[in-house]
Image (cartoon, rainbow, N blue to C red):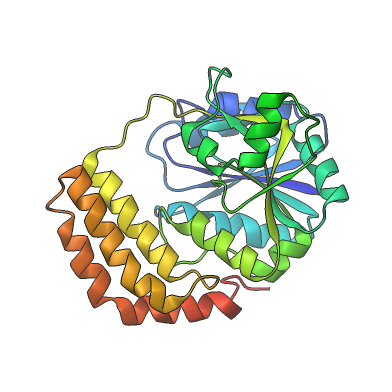
Length: 292
């Protein structure tokens, strides 16, 4: 069984030791590829000097999260890996994380993406955004001390920790180039679901996503909301006409809530680019965005 861990880096010095040391200590054999988006700090030098087990690809420009990951995903296809594990640079795993996820998949091969529980670095609290991804059944079973299932289905989980089996990768391909940063994981999940794969959380598997004290500026929050609207319009699992109507209204509501009048420009951009978004939606039905 061949497993490839893919890590996209950009000025990752704050986390790189914890991230790569955790990969090095995994209880199962794996390979690791680093796709660096032209870091300007000592990320590459640190990896070369201390983590020789990693293959490094240095991009000449910052390609963003999705397209950089696509380089690693294509490498996995070309070298016939059985699983890929997408790992954020600000995240790390525990020795048994991958073995638990793979064992869960072998009993539940209808899943195209499996994620461990994603905790803050303090390890005493789940990532706030991850909590939103947890189903009511998962929360209820956990609180009540009920027998936990091996996998709980969800409609979305962020790509800080994703296990993707070869079968799903070959059918779905890589991230859409329409989403250079933010929104690419939503679009990928939508395409997974369209191809009849499930998205799951494995509660016995644990991992860290170190962003507890990160606070987004208002301008970034509204930009993310705008990109979420594009991702929803591109979602092949939901009525196109419903989303064409709802998304500008949803974005307007968020602008009012955040008192972001500059965010109104995103509503204008959204409305004037409907033709392009509809075209991208059609591509999502058939095009894998990777050479294979």
